View 1: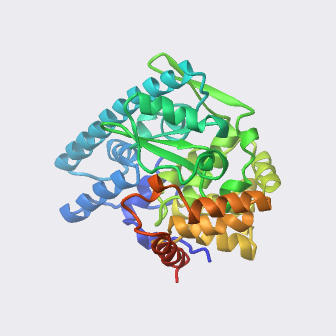
View 2: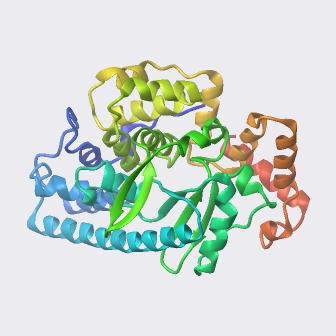
View 3: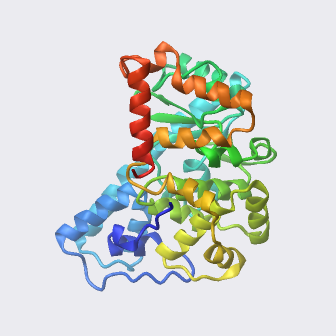
Length: 370
């Protein structure tokens, strides 16, 4: 079952930082500078939750009291974060250009797309890797293009066609960065609920250094932000919850209608409710009022619960995917790929089919909290 993430999971000052500059946020800042140990913990937590930009803004704006040494430290931390972001954006432009030259269309997810389109200042939104969405039929070609550029796939495909038909995507590693190639937003039943064709029906352009890039439409960016916030890290990443608040749709009724039509209203409601609660925002407006009142079904609770625990696993999410697949042929192909994958997928990981099955059962039980 789904667990709620309690505010005690975070330093209280970090909750205030996460809500900084949002209308109606009520999380209190400390009245005096934090003692060294608490300050070090706050800086480390801000980096982990992708909030160094908001931490610096809180200090520079006088909301978070700080000593001269603390102000210097947070500025230096943020400066180093931005240098990393600039390096990643250079890689992003290069990779998207290579893919475009090979006639592979992309959509930039999270990271630069949110920073340049949805935040009032791109410096407020940091990230540590790159995420691109691809049409399912383009995944294999995209992998080949990026491998030809020197990137290495982290994990082999279980069987040919698995990426295109079933998986969330795959990850490739460069010399100093990683790039996640997405077919859908998340592994498991919630990923199957998405209308993948509709995600490509519209796009919003932005530029980095004069180079054109494309993100999802504003409504679909909000939907992805909800997916990442509700189904991503545990405890919930405050930077992801800030994304949900920052991307709050102008058309609240339209967002609710889309979530309902696609059958993903439990994900959207959970993300909006958690963002509202943990960032200390008012329960006002149609979307937040709807999210606060939404009661998930037993199945929705179970599917959400796969993502709201420390021990969540690929195996548990993979097994939950099987009954949600639409037909017997897909179910059979999916099960065969997981139980009898190609040798390249199991190399250096499992000594036999039986050992792999035993490992999968243990991981599935662990991922379900058993």
